Length: 187
Image 1 (tube, rainbow, N blue to C red):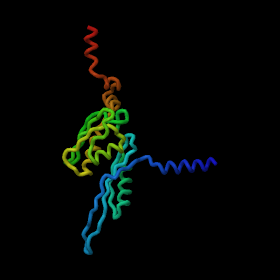
Image 2 (image 1 turned 90 degrees about the vertical axis):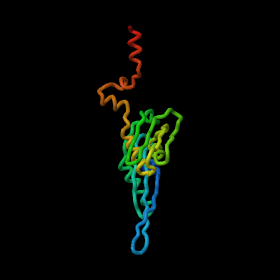
Image 3 (image 1 turned 30 degrees about the vertical axis):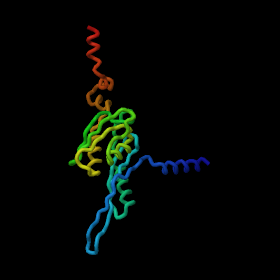
Image 4 (image 1 turned 180 degrees about the vertical axis):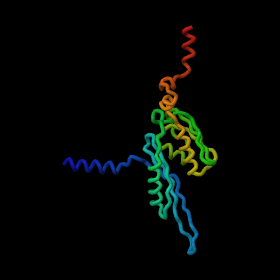
């Protein structure tokens, strides 16, 4: 009986994948040959665990499902971790660039939601961000927008990372400008 339960648990785990994926774009491409045209498909997919990990991939094939499968596999291989504040927003504002694409991302208060355009929205949803304000400036190409968004997210650093880099404590990094008022009060 215990063996049957283990098999059922394994089956349930396989049916509920740890990653969610979002198809961002599908493109039909053609190659002209002697007898006419050969059509193929290119797919762009964003994959994430909605807890701070995200990746994207592109796949090409003669059939749409095969292109999506290839893109999903590539996206899972190219995952990266992004530190999030309170698990819902970015720690600080940043800008990402790729080619002519430029994106500006800003942290937002709770309840704001995801205010971002198409491909950027897919990245934030798969990442698990709930509150963010983002704007795409320049290229409207979904490939470049996703790459620019991920470039900006790579620059994201948490207070813990900054403290470690500076050799300080997290509390010292997060301190506001309270120090001058304390010095005046003592004098």
